[in-house]
Image (cartoon, rainbow over all chains, first blue to last red; front, side, top):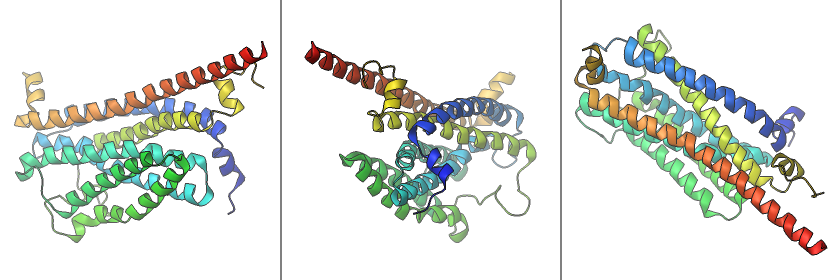
Amino acid sequence: MYLPKWLHQFGAPKYFYDLSLCISRWAGIICIICFICGLYGGLVLAPADYQQGDSFRIMYIHVPSAWMSLFVYMVMAIAGGIGLIWRIKLAEIVARSSAPIGASFTFLALVTGSIWGKPMWGTWWVWDARLTSELILLFLYLGYIALQSAFEDRRVAARAGAILALVGIVNIPIIHYSVEWWSTLHQGPTITKLDKPSIHLSMLIPLLFMVFAFKTFYISTLLIRVRSEILEYECNTSWVKQLLGINNGIK
Amino acid sequence: MALNDFFSMGGYGAYVWSSYGICAVVLLLNVIQPIIRERRTIRELQKRFSLAKENKSDKHS
């Protein structure tokens, strides 16, 4: 299947390895700055909510983790699909490396949501649409991770995982629209509404910082994982040997 | 007193700080684990190649 030349170059492991060193460092720096701004704004500057008091501050980690749990899943499924169609090693690596990070975000969304639910709803857990579909997302991630270690051959594992991820994509719109389709304890969207967001700027700005911090966190840690995988995949190529300083005598 | 208020979070301190604590632990693990893995991968590959080189030079001598 046709693929533009620049995309091929981007998919070349050596090129990507060098690029990722730079990107992961800068993403890490931006991530730390955004975390500091977001935490200070969210925990100190933002006023207490008139209904929920100070407990609403859990939002600053709950909402970004929940968004990222969906975003990472989309990246994982799309990268898996690209790997499936064009057999690009790098796409398979990105898909596999995303899974543990996505599972962590999903876990955080569930746990912080549960801790938030206790004082606000009076219960840790209800089996309603939003919470159940998010739990299914966690199981999809865990299933994907288990599938990766079930195969000896990494490329077979990547293909099997990609199919699982693509089938599981059905769950993503269900999670997103669950609060609108079914009646639920979970509150509806406050920020992504088409008309004006129903949240005050002093509460919104720290949230945006936290969202950006989580996103750069994902990029930065993903690239570290990707680099290890590239080295393992490409360990017999000359550029890896050169990189590890063992080119002497091996021709 | 201001600091006390900050930690009590209007009575929700236990909920707020436990969720931030869990979040910090999970995110830190997500930083430490891949860094350790990258170092281990590089070390193991270097060991593997230096062993292969030794074997090669042994045969030649």
